[in-house]
Image 1 (cartoon, rainbow, N blue to C red):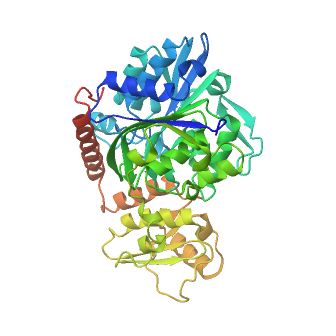
Image 2: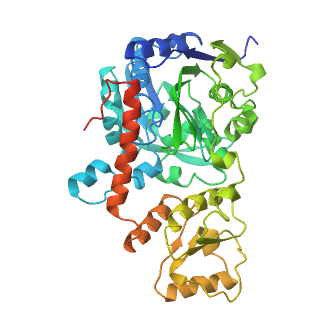
Image 3: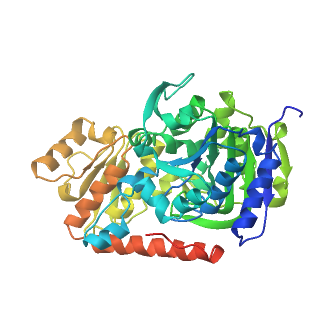
Length: 459
């Protein structure tokens, strides 16, 4: 065990103030060798937190943890500390921009990373600690080869990370509907360009994420587990779970392995990113080869509620789920099944009923009298079919309807198009979307303020 990777676990009772959080972050790093082991005088440091959406913890990493980490880097002699992030594709493209919509009396979508950092108080926390911020969409990239990549063979990588002396990974402790958990490896998705992030959400996402790790492994991974998330994460569909934890380690794979067990998943190898990363030689995942310092896993472990699609067959969320919607599904990948579940929630609002065709070669009934206005195609596989399916598509086109939700994966653009269709028909309204976004945000704001009364969103 002398060469075993060390992962530290530090726990305190919530609520916590900035001083206690700074001490926790320092203790977690001291247990694995101290900040001087990672940051030397005169070096440049880049920190990549998980800032998923314009909501405070648990959806985004706590600004106080980010500030504490910046302060410790500065104290260690760092010449420059930059906090960089690329918000989720949904936030950048589809999420209702509440403040902009209010100001213009219209529906405005999309929030840039730097604007979100300001709203959450991250900008102030970082600058007060002696660092600066930037968004992935605003920085120069360089095209790099992925040595040993199986899905990604090259990618556009942020030059500021590539040129930095020290790269620190700062994920949150959360579940995720597409990857089961979102920890150190998944957090690296946010350093990709908008296009690479968007088209990375396919069935090969786990290997895709591991391939990003091959470009540059973080020197330090620190996990914000103060308020974790369980259930249908990583966004507002998840459920907050107070934990009071900070974890740290130099081996990202080992950190993810320990975090997974802390989340009540006894076998970390069922997390695809962890297993694949260990297989590809990027770190240690076997709990028997990892040294845990500070608190034990058993002492802090809680059984997290997992996303529904990991606890029951995905079919139960798609076929036979809505009495007014018929689903015709062919050889669809699991990602399209998951997208279908989300699309169906909206299509089910069509009172007269609807049909959804998805997947490769779905066996539609020959000669069926289709309600063409309310027949939707989901994904490139369905839209590329010949035979009877093609005839249905041709009839829809000739009638002047456009109910085709393109994409592989049919992701945010498909969701946006469906919302526009339903808005044009008066089934949903822009006012409803804005109010729903306001209500969701306020609920999360109020929840977090119970743990940090000093926090308020910054205009």
